[in-house]
Length: 307
Image 1: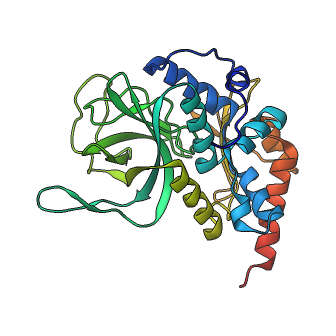
Image 2: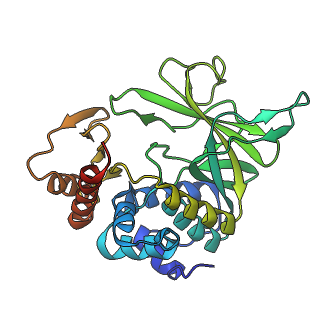
């Protein structure tokens, strides 16, 4: 096991007490973690900048927790997911790391799983709690705010938002005991109504499908090393977070160059100002030097990139 900080220190950082595993406790842990360790990839960009050996760049759980507690940084998808999984392990939850590949699973005529899409694109956690399986999106640009039940014909409040403010939704379709497909359904797809059956098919109007499978911690670390070799998340800077004091939610990506604020339930665009890093740090609560370093690293990459 990686040298993660003592569990009582991690829970104190999340402002929660230790409890027996339950769905309600998992939900509260997830919400607290997403607030204290929000999605951001500036920390990942600086590891590309400062560490030459790709294998040594991997940001392990102890890095995530220590830096969150000391300077208020967040985490990207893989390192943030792994750090949260380690906390759930220590608290006695039955959880596995999951690697998600974009695309559909290949199945035979008997509907048995034959093969998965080869290119991993995302990761999450599979939790078994109170007799139900859940997908836990601990650290993601997708704002799935509660554990997502697998195979149930209804949803709870797991709505996310695109940069334009349109709602999109999620569904998890089981594929036997060990696999599932995670569907992201756009505004033109079917509608979820809490506690009521789905209307339409998950295949209609979807934005993407992730074919998902649980892996060991060791295999997940291999995936993280592979992702650093591939240069994943090295071409942009983005974050999705609520400011720790104002509790106002913001999201930003250099892909669009837009900063969005959600204070009243709807998204509005904000001006970036002269010092972009200062604006981003002010609204997000993330460390200024980390955001500034990430933006400068991207600017340097663009200058040396071949035309």
